[in-house]
Length: 261
Image (tube, one colour):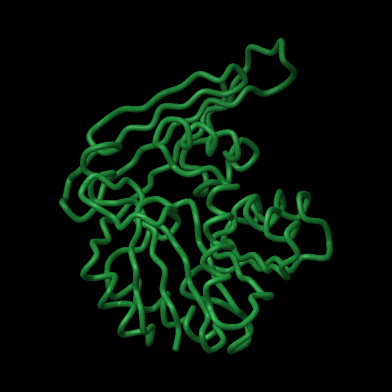
């Protein structure tokens, strides 16, 4: 077994990321991509004016972009991982704009987008209210008047109770993983991801081990609302996991809908 410890975040698992997402959907009850996209489209249809240009922040392998592009939207994706963007390019082809950048940097012209989204709890890596406000300011800048930003974060219940304080593991044959969560602070959870990826064909007994350390932050409702107000959003609604049900104490994924004046 080869060891490639401390690989760049998500770089080593980019090839299997979509399968990991399937596991998260099944085990952590995140909404599947088609349901997330259906929610986005329903919310966009409720705003005044047509939604045509859409930016997906932390777009990963492009699964949400692919659904939106197929529905006729003009889409742009942004992610910090070149490996993820490479897979998104394979999925979407050469006609889709893909940008490598790290939030809060959004190298997109002012008022260029009708809507912005970020699914998959990517903004749970944001270390607190001040950092979130910087991201929301950048999103506000690229949205046109009346534009909508939909994103989700792991809830306090998810981080401290459901995922946190546990060890999660699965063996998928050609890869396996162990994810260990600890809660050294009420403000965040430390997550230690160890993956074993088969190297070679289906009969190979050789695996490459990679390790990543992630820190997932609790973003409670009050600081998110304050950050949204500071950024200039006029409404901020928080819902339960891409449904119309208001978020509650057992919600696992807080889904936020922010509207620009």
